[in-house]
Image (cartoon, rainbow, N blue to C red):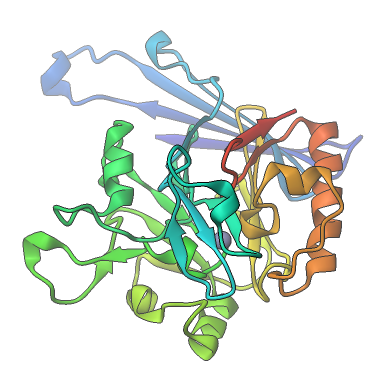
Length: 317
Ligand SMILES: [Zn+2]
């Protein structure tokens, strides 16, 4: 049984509160004729249409989950990249920083898992490289952190450049090298429609389209059209800064706000300095957005996730 209560405040008309109460009756055969009463309460507070707070609790003390979100960086290693747009593995302990090609960048490749009260989210999918035994590196990294790929419930894609979209799909070695299939069988994939169209228009070397062919006409895929909010707590916004239809995400849960800026906000250092990057579609816009986010993040105590930062995967004010 589920009951909803939605209220609008008379004093603050933009403030809305949604209270959801679940009453779960476990199977009778398991508990005899007197099943324990279990009630879950989900309270969401909206300001305008944005969720500013979620509280989930239950009368079962062991399951009280007002805890913070769990953030797990899944590093695929450190790489150098230059004008050729090839990602070359870089061994920080053995390779000489000074011997890198002139003008090359040193970047981490680092998808993130964020465990919220509602979901196990994956933010971008890495390069899609495989281990010697054929296992997708992303799957291995998840399992090393105690997460089965089947537990991922949502995959949020900032954009489809090859260092972010490589792990969208894979060849399942169990079924042979036939068609590629989505790497997360239970997840919904959230991708901007225009980013997908643009990727096919541009193709190689920025996009490797056969890695995401299986996004097309797939019931697991949600094609987003512009800005919005997913399930009342994941806000997404197109920035058009790093790439034309790049989007960023804010995840608001348990009183916290996590920000994933993808390649609009790839490294801590770029947040702290005025830096126009040559590799951005609109470098000036990206710089201005970073300054605005850094300011807001400070005021509202955001946690930032940096996909390409070699030293600081996350930063919390
Ligand atoms: Zn990137």
